Length: 127
Image 1 (tube, one colour):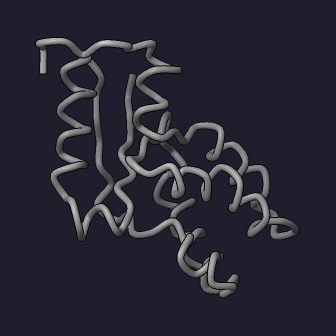
Image 2 (image 1 turned 90 degrees about the horizontal axis):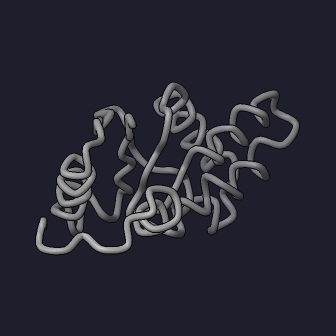
Image 3 (image 1 turned 60 degrees about the horizontal axis):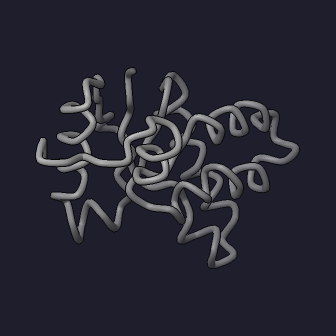
């Protein structure tokens, strides 16, 4: 499977090794992993602070960057929730609702993706 990593802004700044470790795990499981360098933020900080126009602008960039991704995986439950749920609210009435909803369905939090989508329950000594 081709997996596109979304590494949230706070992970990139505070714990960048997290993204590299995710890629390593997914590649060892036999998946192709890509990281679009144009990615930035999902818009959650602005969204949660009530700055919806700013959040929408950031989220539009996110949609543009990840629109062609087969599967998006992120190490953040809240950023994943933003894409899966917050985008629906942000893009209501904009003409990009369906695109946002489709991307939300293809976006997963890393541990949930491993267990519930890939059915990986034990990484064992391989890692």
